[in-house]
Image 1 (cartoon, rainbow, N blue to C red):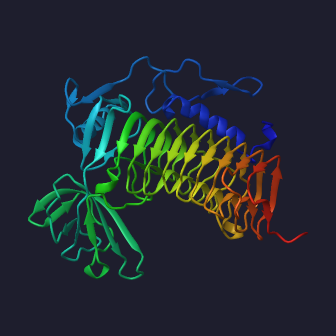
Image 2 (cartoon, rainbow, N blue to C red; image 1 turned 90 degrees about the vertical axis):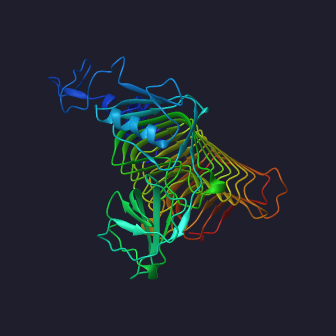
Length: 454
């Protein structure tokens, strides 16, 4: 591909992110020692470990703690033993938690720390969620409280991760709070942190044992690799990807997720919110109520590569302000809505070489947004889109006031009868949409351009 065809200001950032992430941790990425006489940067070739410096040698061996059901440094089969291993390694500056094959049952999320590698033993290392329990709150709690009273405490235990939900008493908007139960007297439970939101009975508050399986907030330099996460969807209530998933990250950076199976979550598979330089590679995310892969609000320079998404609501969902991302060589099967969805201020992304088959409505969707919030300056090229939607399905649908988008060398193919199916549709308010070398077969209409001439 001609480098000049990449979205503006992305090539150097993408390559830099890919290089750093391929090493699996921020503290092992490339760095510069200074400048030579001509002012050119001089790379660090033989670093030393110096206090406070993230650049250090590529050590042959780092601290590793094994977790297993037997014959391991820490023996057990719950979230608690994995959390203990993470905390042990984190207190010593980082390293690897190696989870041996077996099934581990979770009643709370494992909270990740910076400079931690979670490495499984392949798909036989299974982290699964216990069935959820939900009840109403029986008493008001104020924003400064650190306790709640449950109407029915059966099914709740000390150490459980819970999600408290209600309607805001003033606005009617949703309130969502995630906490851990750390003390109990009857139906009264102490929380690990104060509520910081009012939970008043008029807002119909509830408590449920809902949480991500692996969770990270404000951490950097983490790797999750070579294991399976099962959300036990049939026995759990819904908690969407803004708050949970098999993996859920918030305000993180320099993250690698590789060779992970994420399945059966009553929400999203893998979700990262306001996270930068995230690499998700060779993962299989399937059979979720929500999204397969969810690069969330504000995430910069995500690389989503060589993954497989099956039977999710949407395969890859660019959320809000997701920029300078790369989605390539992914396989997306039987998304209930769209294979790939790009929308609110998601700009300067490159979507290429993906195979999208049997989406419920649309193969690739540019969502309907106002001009100031549109998915501008994105490029989709060399994607293969097969059998999208029902009788009126669309291969690529450009809606709203989307501007400066290039659709090049994509193949949109329909193997069923043409019916009212459309290969590419360009909405009446879209501007500066470039079509080049696309191939469309079997659709009733190859290109439906609804813009006014001139």
